Image (cartoon, rainbow, N blue to C red):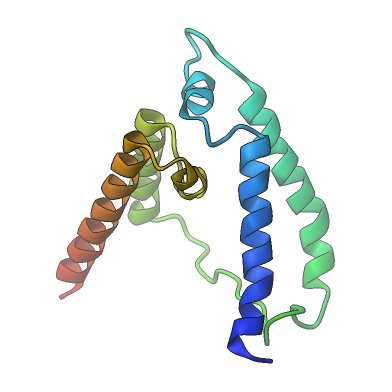
Length: 143
């Protein structure tokens, strides 16, 4: 199977994911910020979107993993790390703070690039800079 052909399922899955984010209004930062505003204009609808995704995942994943291998790959690429360490906790805290401040996590952020306004371009630039800084810090910590 050619490498270009192997990218088609990923393109389809990414497009479907982006469409789902749009339909669920998760690309609207106000929706996310209202979800996090328990004392003010709290909007619980984002919790229903997350719960729906978790339920589908809980039902479908065991059936998928019963297969000998994925349909479009040689083997399943599952995480091997099982312990919760300081990096995961600190990373989750930083992610949560950024999500709460900007109203975007990476999936909706990429989907929102279609709007190409200055707000989303600023968020994407901050995301890219933060990614490079974290990689630089990790590389220098291990060296």
